Amino acid sequence: MSLLDHIDFSDLRVFVTILRTGSFKAAAIQLGLTPSAASHAMKRLEDKLSTQLLYRSSRAVSPTAAGAELALQLEEGFDKIGAALGMLDAAAASSLGELRINVFADAAHLLVEPAIPEFVKQCPNVKLAIVVDDRPIDIVSEGYDAGIRYGHYVPEGMVTAPLTRAHRWVAAASPGYLRKYGRPVQLEDLANHNCLQLLLGDNSSYKWEFGKGKGKQRIRVPGLVTINNTAATITAAKAGVGIAYLLEARIRKEIEEKSLEVVLPDFAAPSEPFHMYYSNRRHAHPALRKLIDIIRIQHGLARLR
Image (tube, rainbow, N blue to C red):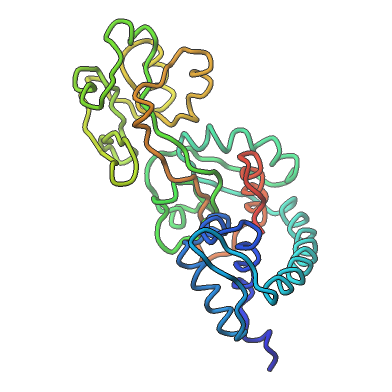
């Protein structure tokens, strides 16, 4: 039995991705893993090879001489494998059935809508069904091939692929509202404002999150208007009804047009990246990888390897 029989192909992929991205964390994000899983994969690979492949420090990761040589050979091998699989993938993706994706509204607007024209171009014979639904559902039992959620909301046991980098949640209001009621400077000032309540898909009211790390706070804000639709919330905020809590990327156009202004920007909270996810109990639809790559490229990430 050769050494190759003892090596997990996915561990080799983790190794190459760590060197390409320069860190365990970046490699984990690209591969849809946790940093801990990436670290375990490297330890497992080095143990099986009885060879140190990486120098690790708190600031950087670099290859040993053996690691550099192995990485060079693997890159060439992965490129050939990728090209071979790509031909099969393209043929299958262009002709195979229907792809059904369950997406919540903000992800549909920010990720899926811009990707549809390129997807149709690359997969002209695939029936693409996008169902916009903010309810938390079981995509497997309801017959979907995949779904999109924030990373920390993906159910356990699912295969994930990050689609974007982290976002920011911000509070925003119209210039007219701010002239009339004043601009909040501290979080405590929100108690004196009309805040548009955010209703989640499970009909619970969302506490607004501000800050990050140990300084992160979740506060309940006052307000008479409750909306479960982002577009309607944006319209109400632009009309001066109150302060809204929204993804900054979702209101980029309104900010540029100055119909909405971000308030309390120093307290903006980071959000997990969007992830595509699907069950590991079934093979991913051949066209799903195409859609994932299109979205990732449009948002400045590399194709999945």
